[in-house]
Each structure stands twice: as C-alpha cells, then as structure tokens.
Image (cartoon, rainbow, N blue to C red; front, side, top):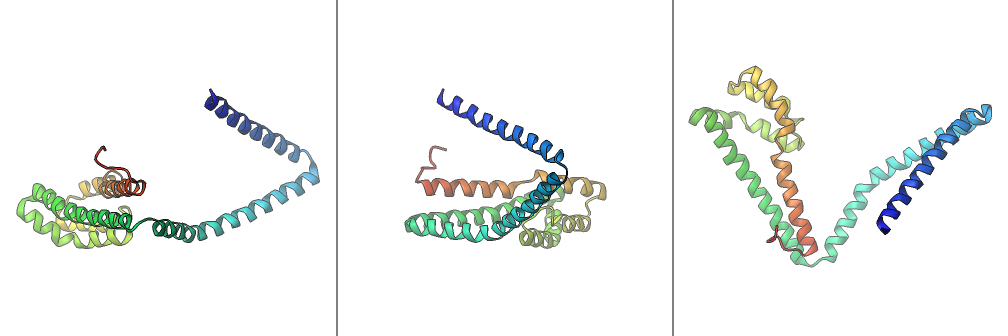
Length: 193
C-alpha cells in the first residue's frame, strides 16, 4: 500500500511538471518581446548546461576510476586475487574459444584444408577485432578475409553483417566475468547459481 501511494505520488509530480512546462511555453509564446527575451535566456541556459554536462562527461571516467581504486583499496587482498583469477580464467576461455571453436567451425566447413585456409587468413581480422573491440569496425577486414578464403560474395555480404549483431560470444563471456566479480565483491557463493 505504501509503495503504491509512493509510486502514484511520483507520477503526479511528473504530471504537474509536464503541465506547468506546457503552460509556461504557451505563456512565453504569447508574451511578445518579453517572451522572446525569456526564450533567448532559456536557450543560453541550455547552452551553459550542455557545456557543464560535457565537462562532467570528460571528468567522469577519472572520478569513476578513483572511486573504483578507492573501493578496491578498502577490500582485502583476497578480493583482488579472486578478480585476477576471474580475469585469467576469462583470457584462457577466450583463447580456447578462438582457437578450438574457430578450428572446429573451419573443419566442418572445409576439412583439414579449411582449417589451414582459415588460420592463414584469420590473423588480420582477429588483430583488428582485438584492437578495436568492435565487430562492426572489423567488418571490412572480415569481408576481405572471407573473399580470400573463397567464401562466395553473396554469402559473405549477407552473413557477416548479420553476424555482427547476432554473434555475441565475447559479450556473453564479459557478462559472466562481471557477474563473478560482483558476487565476489558482495561475498556471495557461486555454487547456488
């Protein structure tokens, strides 16, 4: 009952704000020269606020990094060891996923010759993806490598852009790493997941 009334109170506050904004806008529009001055002042205020936001956006990573460093310093060394172990496990899993998974896919697609052809042409796209951390940014390099591997243009031009949005193996692994870190930070057991 308390939560319901509290939630409705927030809705009423927002409604009042919206209604007063509309009434203020109408009044400013109908006020002639004085309204133009107020409108100009509000435009100037908007410019100043946007500058403040851009300064904060520039400084926020520094503040967040300092906050994270302070939080980590206040924890015991066991948490840092757990975090380092999770990152190490992530790198091992990523290397296994890249080498073993890609080799299996290449073998399914072309046998032993497919594996050799894949690894001959996979280094440039892999380095680009690692350097940019973006599937989309590495798409042109992937298309070029696919053509060198003998993948038909119709298949490469449809499948690779589609997989940029669908294949999120790395993002899933990073999400799992974040979950492990948060559980460790809160002192929760991962056994019950």
